[in-house]
Amino acid sequence: MKTSPRLLLVVILAVCGTLSAPAGAASAASLPGVVLTSATATLPSELSPLATGKRIQYVTTDINGSLIYATALILTPKTNKKNRTVAWAHGSTGLADQCAPSANQNVFWPEARTAVAALLSRGWTVAATDYAGLGTTQSHPYLVGGSEARAVIDSVKAARNLDSALSTQYVIDGHSQGGQAALFASQIAPSYDGALVLKGTASIAPVSNVDAFAPLIPGTPGQGYLVMGLYGLAAVDSTFNPNTVLAAQAKTKTSALTSGCLMEILAAYENLTAEQLLVDGALPDAVVTKLANNDNPAQTAPSAPILIVQGTDDEAVPYFITHDLLLPQLQAYTQPVTFTELAGATHDSSVVLSASTVATWIAARFT
Image (cartoon, helix red, strand yellow):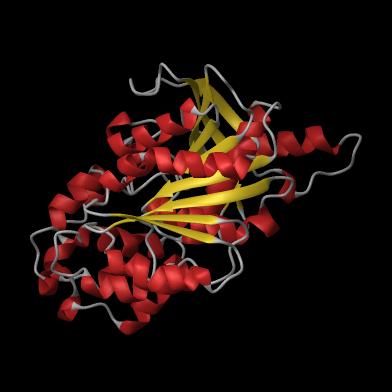
């Protein structure tokens, strides 16, 4: 199921034409969330007893406000439906089209299935975006928070366009890349979500403070994440080319970014030294600044209560990045912040171990 940019333009023009009579011309602001295509989705075995699924293409915007489209799963509970929506923001899957969880169950990670099952069991509809560029013709702006946030919020609008019984109330729940996306969405919600009402944001092991985090990655097994981050930056910043900072040996591995997904990317880069990964073994300060400007949440105020969950043994997002740096940044604003520490939990096990806790916290936001 693929929509070309030309077809997208035709559909948008058709929508504008439909909406323009007799109420007047539709503005571009009315289009995000419009569903372009919808098809029955085959769900993972953990979720199929709990919900029916639709894989959709829907209108969203890029960080400059231009209309683009994204894909998502909309999961509707089979029983006890509460007519509230939770947006699920997934963790890292890769950069290529085949890395969209809505179309590839191999990257609908087991921990994500556990988290989504906990949401569905409470009767909430789940809108699970793929983010811009996964499953579409665009490049994926990996870790660019402003891009992710728009796709998350517009997936909720799309869910309501499919099901008019859904309330305007919604909560966002995300892990890792998705935890970062959730925090960014809370920042832009008042100016972007229109009639929607954000009630809270749950963020599990979120990416943050990239200016402190990124310089620690070269030479470690997780350096494939950094390479993805560089290409994510390049997707929104035409003045930056990853090849200007990647070392010669790292450049020979870039086919993994298009032929594989997260595990293949991590495997391709994990054994390189820092000098084999980056020119002179380190990122230039100017590049670190660009990454921080695009990837760091908490640069502006959140708009709803926040739950932060962090495992102490997280191998991907170090505990201190969340506890020592992000938490005080969020607490400096007026929205209440709840911090849940999971002793011994890893990056992925923190999602499983907190699934019930997160669902209970969300339920309190909907009361």
